[in-house]
Length: 115
Image (cartoon, rainbow, N blue to C red; front, side, top):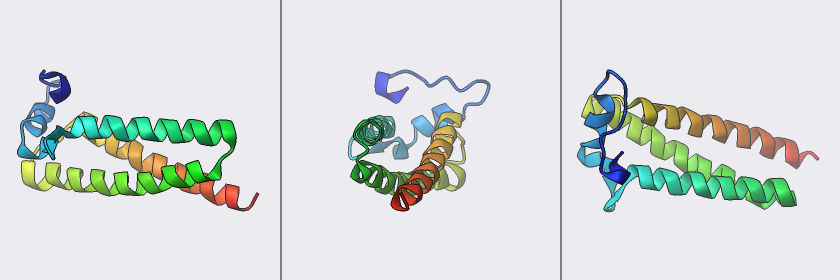
């Protein structure tokens, strides 16, 4: 992983290593993986806040963060497919999980509005 200075484990494909070595794997001098880790941590904290305090604002904040995250993973997936010409299975999995979480948060947000 770029965070630790090691090559990613991606099975028989070299896609992860190709993506990691591209100029797009760092944004503002910070590895994309670090941005993703911070994003995930923020989502976990918001989810815990919503779950423990039933604070709908935390759910709304998570949803808005997920909207931005979904846009970010869409751009990164575009770069993988059409610019880098390599697919990182970890990146693709993270993109799917981000979009799924956004949909889930949207459904939860809709259900809490009617309660």
